[in-house]
Length: 247
Image (cartoon, rainbow, N blue to C red; front, side, top):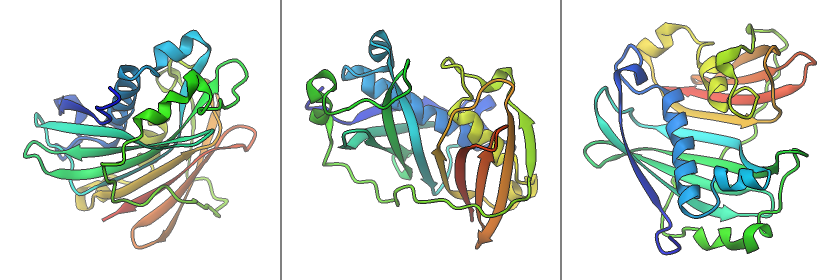
């Protein structure tokens, strides 16, 4: 696996994975990206199951997705993933999304931390397992999209409020990272999705939220089809920030 640094995984766009346009939804794509990250890490000895035995787990910190198109219903598509950089507390993982004709239709960048499940503190990646994660850094793949940037939300007006329920909660006991994406995309009227498409989506995860938490969504337009969103929970603590760019 040290010589095979890029993982390649094939999927089919199921009917229940598409929206009313017949295209794969961003939430499902995000879930596939996270699954590919898990497959790639597991194949190379630092997957969730192995880490959990030592009370560690991977946590997604930031995600940025840029798409020129989305796979259509029943279409096969492929996701390639690789590790770009490893730092002491974070690692950069990239993705390329390739359609049924072999054309790359999108890229994604992500930043991950490994945390101790008991203390919730980040682990030193360069000391875990002898630091051998750096052996899987791939320098031959390119990811020609901007890295996740700083997102600022100034509005004080609440756009939407919801309570975290059963379907929001994942195996770690907190609101699943993909559920935030789905809730954020629900802030926009359906006409946006009839007449435009999402060119770029960014999200930065800051704090955890749990079952029963009241989540408040703040949305503001920053111009040119670009929106910034902030999610806060009961005590006004920021949970995540997002940027959505329509085209």
